[in-house]
Length: 624
Image 1 (cartoon, helix red, strand yellow):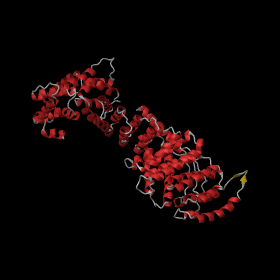
Image 2 (cartoon, helix red, strand yellow):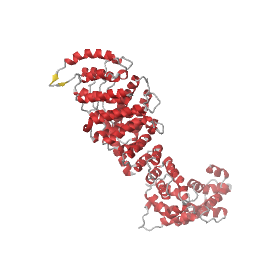
Image 3 (tube, rainbow, N blue to C red):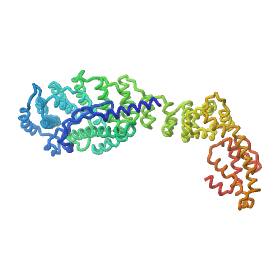
Image 4 (spheres, helix red, strand yellow):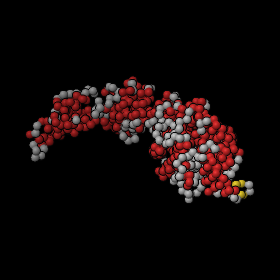
């Protein structure tokens, strides 16, 4: 697992640095009543980087005017826009030119963007095309982003023809930043698909997303300041996408809810994206497709906790499946990386989608490593998906690590799924070495006795070697009579205690067994018990206490002498006492009750003899 966790830590570091670094990113064209917080004093363009493997998004000052902010609806009157455009053209015509390149001022770009967004939203293709002729190169790139984003909301063949025709015209007139457009629209498309699976309002979705983002960052390793910066920036990108979705939903007459696209509409949307990719051609590199793939996967990890089971097979996921498939065909090579990360964060529906994409494209994804990640973070639903649909079969590593960490739910899941005898035995060893007594107690009955008998010495030696200082787990196995035969259990412990110096036995384990569980420890216990009894007699005969012990009732005299031993035996618990305690109990039973119980399986009978000579109220208290 060290390799696996090393991969996870490296992923965390890459995510944190990618989210917090600065780099230019494409325009956030917000329009209408959802951008009232814009500050006109801000620079027109700001640089920040997106999430994941250096995914670049974009944010720009919303291209809206104060007048349009007062409008509460997004459907635009084409005649009104054209009349406003005629007033704007006189201003555009006065712009200074450098060579043949137009250069719009900041205010002109804001006005242009407002008019263009309105034209696209109202499907006024004539007005939109006339505006393209007035745009400078940077504004054309903004226009490409706005138009491409709108494809995820089209619903008719006529709209498809209008939007793709507009994209062609924008590119023909000089738009060149295909990378920015592809990354941004991939992120948005993912958010659209995810939101279509939800029944809550978009306002509530923002809150849910923020909470999920916070939880995900907490699961990452890394600097807290870096994580806070990353979280703030990703939340901005996500809020932008949700505002964009809300804007288009209102334009389609769905106040506060996401319009659910039909299968036909989704095919039209995917056709539009394919046309864009064809137009971009070799302007988009393999790296661009890879980063766009990452951008599309990331929102799904945030939404995943709210997906209904089976979402990946429903209509809502069709668009993102098609998008990711086209990105893979274009050259995205990070399917396995996104697959592992989705497994790590329990994004089961995304895992399911990526499995399907990998199968369709004959790509290799490491389902066994993914199972390790899902197990480590206790994502049970994802584990089930990886086993049932991904055919993951490597249970041993994840099971052992779960046992070692005391993750009972994960251990139970693996046992219920069916594990081989050796896997269960190794998991028991792992739980024992890390003193996860509850897990060891659960696993012990599931390991066949013949396996335990054959490997008993190796189990104890391995547990002692990896114990990290505490041998409570080893003590638990012995006290539980893990071999089901007291004589055999004592013999194994004695064998390890008497092992030669050249045998691979941890010194701490050897000392522990020698002092407590060996034949020598039993002899020492008998000797201690005899000496203890003689000391009690001397106190009774020669003690100078003002309290005459001989005048006390017999049970109280026994309590004074043997209550500490009784309590130690109760605290030890289990089926077997250590040889040291057993020796002391044998001697106490002989001295107090005149009985000789020397058989190795008579520990409980020995304790009963002692209890019969103690005051009942002390027996009841300690038993409780």
